[in-house]
Length: 252
Image 1 (cartoon, rainbow, N blue to C red):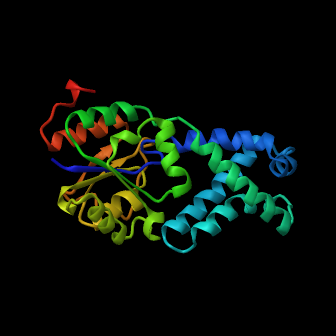
Image 2 (cartoon, rainbow, N blue to C red):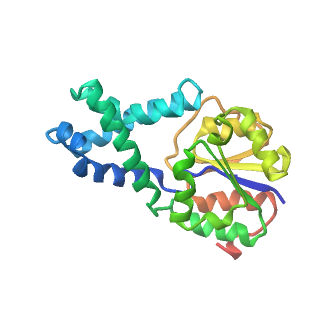
C-alpha cells in the first residue's frame, strides 16, 4: 500500500480563508495598517497584501529569497506602497509578522472534506505524512488547531533542511524520514509546480488538487505517475483508492 504525502496549505488546511480572516482583523487592530489603508478600504489592503505575498512566495519557492526577507517584506512592502517610511514600515512589519502568525496558528478552518478524507484513508490503513514549505513556527499549530495532527506519522518542513519544494533534495529527505521509497510515495498538493512537478521530478507519483480548475504548464501530465487532477478532496479519495482497487464509497 502506498505512502501518502500531503501538502498542508490550501490542500488540507484552508490557508486562503484563514489568512483572509486574520488579515481582516489586522486591518482594524493594527495602527499602521488601519492608518495607511483606512481610506483605501479593507479590500485594497487584502488585494495589496495578497499580490505582494504571491510574488514573494514564488521567489521563495525558487530559492531566490530567504524566509526572513519574505516574512518582513510581505507586510513592509504594502505599507511602503501607501507612503509609509522605511523605518516605520520595518517596525510595523516585525509586529505584524508576529501577530499574523500567532492568530493564524489559532485558526481552525479546513478545506471542505479534509477531515473526512483523512479519516477514510486512515481507516483503509494508509500511512500518511506531510511535506510543506510553510514556516515551522506555525505549521504544527495549524494541524493541532484544525484537529488533524493525529493522522500523520511524519511531518517534513522546508525549514528542517533549508530547502524548498520542488527541489528533489527535500523529497529525498522526506523518504529518509519516513523510511519509504519514491515508488511507494504519492504527493497530493494544490501547487502544480512545487507539489506536482516537484514530486514527479523526484520519482514520486502525484495528484493535483485543483479546486479552481486552472491550467498549468511545466508539468509532465502524460507520465503514468501523474495519477490525476481533482476538484474536490472526495475526488482525491477516488483517485487514490482506484490505484489500490478500494471502493471509497464504503467509508467516505
